[in-house]
Amino acid sequence: MLRTSLLVGLVTLVPACPLLSVQAEVQEVCLTYRGVSIPGVPIGGSISQSFNFDDLQGAKDLADADAQLTFTHAEVRATSGVPSFSFVQHAELSIASGDPNSTLPTLTIFNCDSCGNASTTLDVANATSSPAQDYLKTGSLIATIDFTGTPPATDWTADVDICMTGTVDYTVNP
Image (tube, rainbow, N blue to C red; front, side, top):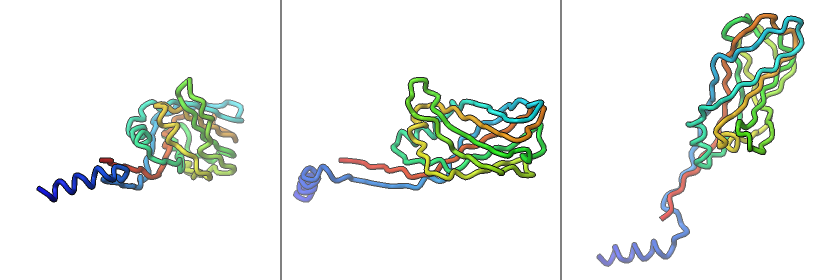
């Protein structure tokens, strides 16, 4: 009984010390948007296509738990209508908040020159440490893909992954 009283007394003397503090690494998490319709360009030139990520619940939960997340890369996979990304001379993918009241700036996740290839996958790493958590906390993202080169004249579709990694801290206070 005396030990219990002493322990309770010590805990009340040091309320600023957490009972538990954990930092965990967040393995790569990707948001996937399937079936992005991209219109053909009959004369060539450029393509700009935007789409909304509105189902962010798991990623938003991480951001709301004060995770420090960084966009790492994006991948665009042609699923129909084009045999490869060999037409791409320049590609860019940017993110903006889908919240109309947000003041967050548009953030470029990838930007590459001469990154076209003979594959149906275009995977580009983010060259900067772009923070993701504030964008995820808004609950909706608008992604925009821009391609320049000689795009196909016919409509095509793609799946898009926007990936991130980071850390999350969890603390339990008395």
